[in-house]
Image 1 (cartoon, rainbow, N blue to C red):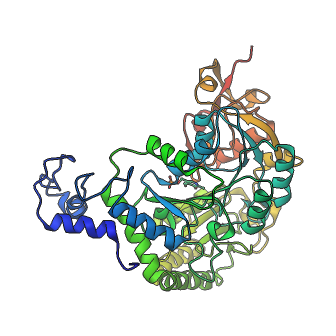
Image 2 (cartoon, helix red, strand yellow):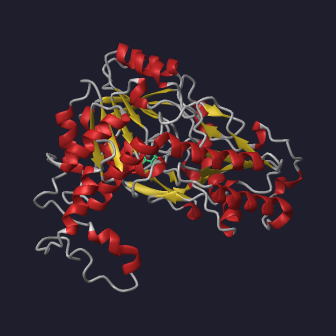
Image 3 (tube, rainbow, N blue to C red):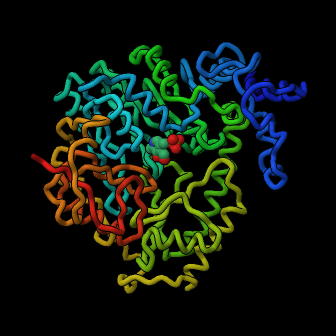
Length: 493
Ligand SMILES: Cc1ncc(COP(=O)(O)O)c(C=O)c1O
């Protein structure tokens, strides 16, 4: 059974009968495809079908899609699995709106992806934010402390659950077993955004998965660390703490009624690949990682931050110790040499390897770093006279706004979809915004994690941090435009 990909097989079987399409999509299996598009799209359009007889229905699966989802549940260790065609984004929206109603409290890691915040807005729920730990040497945020979650659970017994991101964008995670035990002792569900950890549990060098640790609902981007097409994701469920009928209903509300078959079939194929070759492919990818890290150890100018215990080895964070290049500048140098990192933050670049990375990829990126170290770089910073190996926490730019939170747990923050944007607002210079309530979310992208929420009082430390981000050419999503140095704030009556 495991060696089958029921949905992909069913689609191929359908195409091979040379059917006449009298249904959507209008391209009719790519019949009218322009000649320049053909080499790229022909194969995909040939399986771009819809919910016709024999091809099942994502919103009411009974045949090939049901079978594919059941195989995925068995492969990833879930009781039930749902394919998602809107990425982990839609999974997070469904997860939050399933457990929360208007005014409900959810205990949420502060640095969650914006989709979690959007879920809170849709539900009209309130978040009790728990600040993550902070790694001063690399300038990266890490996981939350079990004691902070305990504090939040004790102070907010009415909370509907706990939602954490694990691992985070940098591949840093925490031991979720202890967390799951704690949250369950309080009778609440543990919801995990495992967008970056679909490969967890498939190799001894990779941490165990959130499901294996006991989480109740887990959302994974199958397209990020495994090989589904972009937007392909899964939601896994176990136990009875979250109502699955409501979850399904939320997914039906939030997902397209015409989900892409090539996309769903690619999720099916990604599962088959993990069932058949998972550990072996991971081993190959890890060899590329090892090659790269070994080569980089000969370039003292660059520091790889992989010292934390719960670190995904496929995610490699690198700092230019000479501080000639901050994160975005180093990313730019790599891009000029044909190597495109996953993201840069103000201090670092993040490289993402996977089970399909090759030694050749590792050689190319190593060569790019060698070239930069040999003086190919044209961008200079005022800190350039720092000696190699002199990297210390004080040269890293810290998101120090986190440090104001003495206990790491916030008061409940209300979210709603409309009134927050309906309230009157005005656009002011960033420095004049201190003490005012923000009317917008400030979202450096990547990673798409908001640092200011609508309604939040803007502190001077946040303004300083935003200015540092702007100076470092970090991009922002949403209405905030860094170059204007202006922000929308509410007009309080
Ligand atoms: C932690 C986290 N959760 C969720 C998402 C959304 O995932 P997707 O792009 O699959 O919708 C992202 C995207 O980067 C993310 O970093």
